[in-house]
Structure formats: C-alpha cells, structure tokens
Length: 86
Image (cartoon, rainbow, N blue to C red; front, side, top):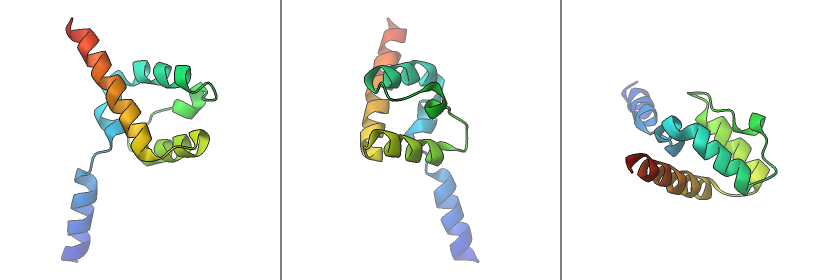
C-alpha cells in the first residue's frame, strides 16, 4: 500500500510544462497556430487535469515529441513574460 501511495504522490507532484504556462495560454496558443498552420482552435483546448491528452494530441498532429513541445512552450512563455515586464 505504501508503494502505491508513494507513486501517486510523486505523480501528482510532477507538473507538466503546460500547467506552468496556463496563465499565458491564449498568447501561446496563437503562436502555436501561427507556426503550425494545421492546428485549429479545437486542437488547442486546454483543460486543467487533461494536459496529457493535449500533449498526445499535439504530438500526433504535429509529428513532434513532447520535449519539442515543451521547448516551444518555454520559449514563448518566457518571451511573453519579458514583454509584460517592459
């Protein structure tokens, strides 16, 4: 039982990069649609707790790995934050 609880605690503490950028999601979503013209609004619907589904949808639709998606998210989130500080 302890092993299961330990696993669940680790899993719930693991945050996806999507969760950390949700405050900038609208701007990032527009950047994604601009870079990847095949993406539609419904492809980019963000629902809290459904991050894995969104990652899988993007991986399949764009043919890229999660690490590439995270890199894009990180770069655009940082750029948005810098613009907000000016």
